[in-house]
Length: 213
Image 1: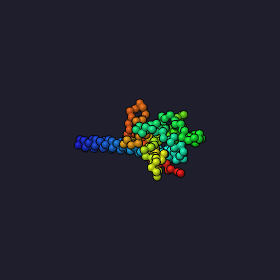
Image 2 (image 1 turned 135 degrees about the horizontal axis):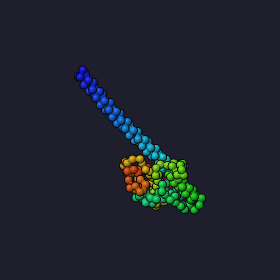
Image 3 (image 1 turned 60 degrees about the vertical axis):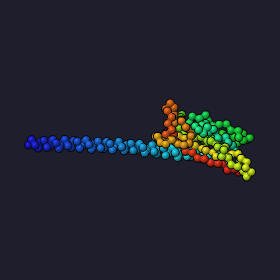
Image 4 (image 1 turned 180 degrees about the vertical axis):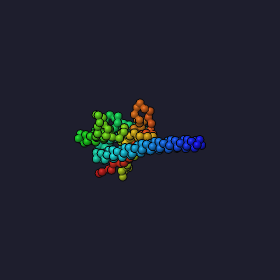
C-alpha cells in the first residue's frame, strides 16, 4: 500500500513537471509569434513608406519636365555632401524663382515646389492640427551637375542638359545599411537623439531634360 502511494506521488510530480514544461513551451512560442508579427508589421510599414517615397520622387521629376523653362529653379539642393537645402520636414518652404522673364511662369514653378513641399510634409491629411499624411520625416532634394552638360556639334556647352538627381529620404523603423544618397544626411532620428544613418532611408533617380529646339 505504501509503495502504491509513493508511485502515485511520483506520477503526480512528473505530471506537474510535464504541465509546467508544456506551458513554458507554449509561452515561448507565443512570444516568438508576437515578435514575428511585430517584424512583419514593421516590414509592411517600411514597404508602404518606400512606395510613397517613389510616388513623391517621380512626382517632382514630372513637375520639372513640365516646367522646363524654369527647370533651373528646382535645383535647390546646392550642398550635395549633406543633401541641403531640402524641402519637406523642417524646411523653410519653396525657394523663389526668377528663371523666366514671365512672372506667371515663375509662379508656376514655385507653386509646383510648394505643392511638393506640402506633400512631403503630409499636408493632405491632418490630425489635431498636425500634418500626418506623409512618410515619417520625409525630405526631398533636387541637385544638378553642370559638369555633365552636353556639347553641341560645334563643341559648345548646351546649358541645362546636365544630370539632375532627385532623392527622397525618410525615417525607417529599424536599423539597416546607410543609403548612398545624401538627402537628409545626419537628420535621422530627430534631435536631440544622436544621428544614426542606419535608420535613414532614401530613394533616388537621375535624369536629363531633353533639349527641344
